[in-house]
Length: 382
Image (cartoon, rainbow, N blue to C red; front, top):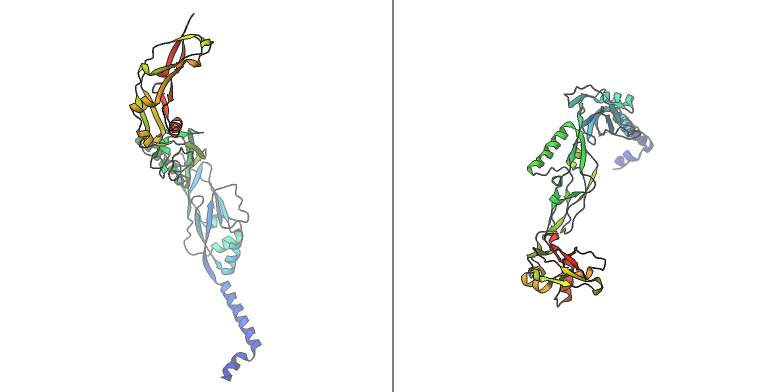
């Protein structure tokens, strides 16, 4: 037992030095062994973006009139490097970025170009270190080519079919997309790579068959929506991801929400239903020309037809509670003979003041044809 203890406790200093030397040599050997390492780079086409000290960025400058589509801006690509752990750590720790300004000739019939490129042809921020770590890589590099498409532009006139609805209104209401209004802009300019634009144009052409175009981002309804909605929509994400841009970038829309079936009652009054509110004595005497009534409507636009206070409206209710008045009292001594006055509807006969207030606030009574509510009056000369 003592011999085992002495083995660990005797000559401790020399043993500690030997252990430190062994660890140091192990790290040295590890650091000098060449290994392959895959590094991921974010692709950008923003020419104004200075790479500076930013790491892991590949900036691609397309030729004028062309757009990078594969990989596209925002994608990630991989590049293999080979070197020791210390060399790779030093390279990836700072200014591990590259760029390339692409130039090529294309005739008018070419809408897509594959530009062959290898990692060694990129302009690295640290070119010496990059080329050293790239030269001995003996595996296939994921970066083989850059694909560009010609940029095209189209003007699109906005339609309600460009609006897709996600979600539902309250059960008593519907959203009337066909009556949508575009507030500030009636058309947009779409710009993007040729083949993505062709797909979008095919989608837009489907509107003629009554289909939605899915041009704009969906209008997302809050639960139990009962009022008109006024969203601000942008280009749908799928077209943004395809490299298409829309000008203006955002569109303000107003979309009406209404009852599925509002309460209303149509009736035909008789000429004798018209009551005259006589003029003041100081404005003279007036004669009312015969009135030929047409259909009138009493409606509750914001009340469901199934509401209890709507279902009671019938011919008898109209007779009991609606009076049609011709207000000669609105005339003055300066009024001309042949003046036209509008027939006005007044509510009467409610025992419950709450009911009267409800109908005053919610009911609209009018002639279906507005001009049929006008009656001509003639001054009687003395």
